Structures are given as C-alpha cells and as structure tokens.
Image (cartoon, rainbow, N blue to C red):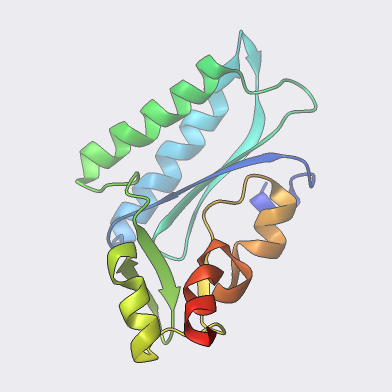
Length: 162
C-alpha cells in the first residue's frame, strides 16, 4: 500500500531528512519502516497504514484510522522509531527549519535564508516546495508538492509586492 492509496482522511506524518539519503540508506529505511508498520498498534489493536521513503529526503508515514485510531502512545512509538532511525543513520528528521525547495533538484533552504532567496529571485511564488505541514492523505496528494505561494510560505511573497 502507498500513501496515495490511503483514504482521504487518513493521518499522515512527514519526516524530512537534513540531507540527501543514499540509496543504501533509503533501502534500509524502507525495510525498517515495513517492519515497524507490521507491528505498529494502538492499545493492542493493529494499525493499518504504510510508510514510504520518497524523493531521497522524506519518510512519510500514513495510517487509516477506520479500524483503530492512532493513540498518543502509538504516535510516540512512531516518533521514537524515526528518532532511532535518525540516530542510526546520523540524519536529523526533526529539523523543521529546512525548507525543501525544488528547482532542478531538491535543495534544503534554511528558513533563516528563505526571505533572502526570495529577494534575490532564486525562489519565486511559482517555485515548487514540499509542504510538510500536511496532515491527511488528501492534503498529501493535493498540497504536499506545490507552489510556494500556496503554502504557509506565501507571507514571504506578500512582502515583495508591498
């Protein structure tokens, strides 16, 4: 099952690596994630979901809560799982201050430099970014990879037109 096959209301968590993952690391993440998903449960009830490594930077976990809702404890287990993966691979999946921007390839732009890149014209309102704030499968499908102007980053472009 892929994230795109989950029902629209399925919950989604996106973890972005702080660097491009190697092919071996992506394969390791895929295998480890499949093992985790096979045993992930909420209060003893198995959770139905999937995890995917996408575009060399992203670990995306999704759960269909029709059978069982992801509880605080089960969410904590998934977070601890991702933290452990990060430690094993020496990757930070929890730095929310890097914006994944796609021009010719994916580049991570520190949020502190984002406005500078907008002013320089390196990043425009039409530049595609990965909006890791999405929380449902429907939003993942329609809003995860989108123009910067349609995300929370739009405020940086408003300054340019004022």
